[in-house]
Length: 112
Image (cartoon, rainbow, N blue to C red; front, side):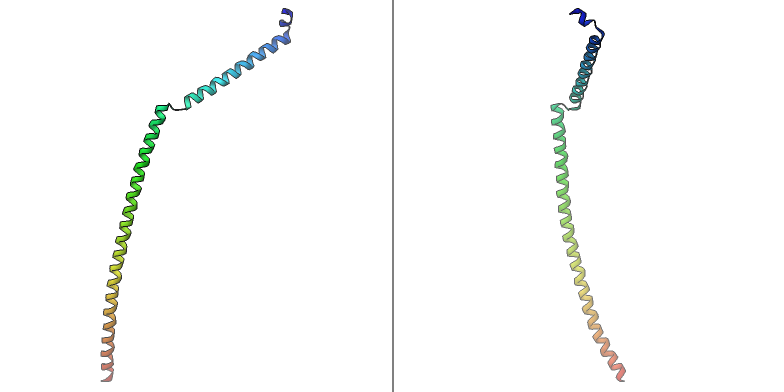
């Protein structure tokens, strides 16, 4: 049996098997290292979640404040538009009454 181990094709096969095993072992270690290094620790993950929730709460609060301010501003704009329309109606009525007076004056002037 020792004679079979000294035959060159058997030695080449043994070396190739050792090389394949070494490559597979190195590949597995690289994958293990990448997966261990890439994952945050449980405490770090919890800290990230807490910070993200705090930022989300802050943004939610700001959005609600902006929505309230937007609603107040829209109500103010509508009120101001109402005042403008009321004033325009007053001016239009005044012009209409003046037009009637001017028409009367022109009619009197054309008769004389």
